[in-house]
Length: 454
Ligand SMILES: [Zn+2]
Image 1: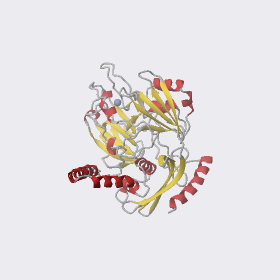
Image 2: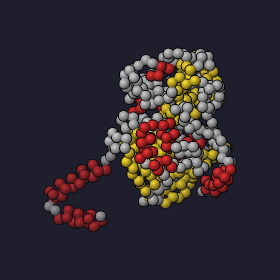
Image 3: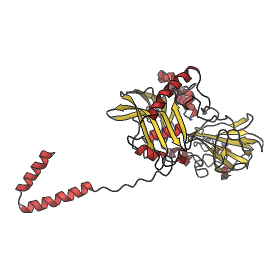
């Protein structure tokens, strides 16, 4: 480069004067264009919401992020049966669900105890025929292991397009639909990197995410999101104050000098003189230092007694009259007017009002990932902003809004997607026991000292 600059200066020096002036002008103009850049103003990260869209760093092998708007725009149906209530985005535009907007959460699932391919994928509304085809064509998929991650992308027709199976830190397999058939092609991706522990420490200045991503060798947005997920049941990160301290222990896989992926091993937060810890166990869930579960348990049914299902959850149902997709994003429980409705888990009421076709309607947020919605109520017993406990009475069932008879329409949303409330994996409040507990406590001891190191 220096040599080149010298040559340019020499050539320039030998040029006649008019040429020098012209060349000089051109050079200045070129430089001006090269230096000038439009000023990009980044919107302030006002709260704890972590925008995946704006994340400059995405883990290399996590595929399957999907435009959320697709779900809500393609499923509008004008039929006036009860089941259409949640289809219409005009009536209920994700109320109580997209308050964490910007978090473009990929459709993914971490395999845990008791899962298999079918139970996982059908729970998220993927077609059972496609799932069966996958498992017949690629038998390895029948051997999912705890802690592995599945993620998927949908095509325009609402069908499975790609399934990504993260088998290990090194190996990923991607299954892609061939044309319009039910044949899925398998591609193996082998990565090799070096995993190393990283401790990232800092003080809150503004909100957690901006503080954690800007601190020296800071977190990626995905990593920050994982931290808030780990702590979600203990503390609302939006309520941290400037000066509060955080320490995050990550294992990162380094490949070509870049972090290919990372795993949150533990986090420590000091706020208001109180210490909060969360550590990841082998099963992918987070526990406190004593191996107690951090997640709050959920009730399966929002009623004291088991009630009859009058219309099941179905994302792929086609309306027999219009022939158009008419997903039913919840479950209808038949019950007499006046039946007490219970909050299925600890949470905060985010909606409690009359809302068109939904009638009297309640939405509750549970931690960062779960939302529940209750419709056609006769009487609301809670107000927006109110904290509720699992099993607490929130309403009396009714027949309000667009219904054909008294019932409760109940929805469970996980990562901004409606899932089947009757089969979804619910948060488990249990702690670790036996050998799992011993292994966990040994790793906590080690990881705690790493978190404390400077
Ligand atoms: Zn319904």
